[in-house]
Image (cartoon, rainbow, N blue to C red; front, side, top):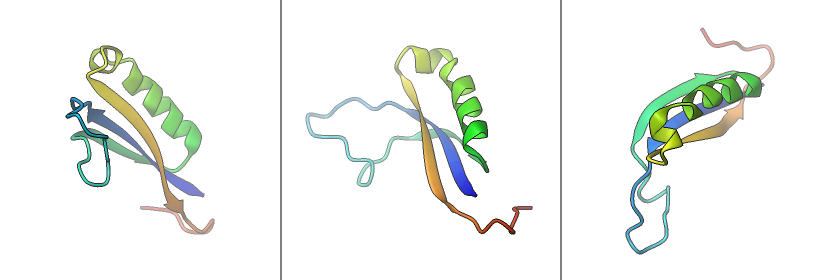
Length: 75
């Protein structure tokens, strides 16, 4: 089973150079971890209904963060 993170971030202005999330990531507002893609998509959909996201000041990202053996569950 793959774990997912749903991340709500602030959109930063373009500083003339290319955006690079590894060297200067956007500021995170909210992070939610879930076990399935369907749950991640539902949470992302709820975040996308927020006014700041619709206005283009924040963005929603769904990230697959790894696989877990089928027999193990988080507590």
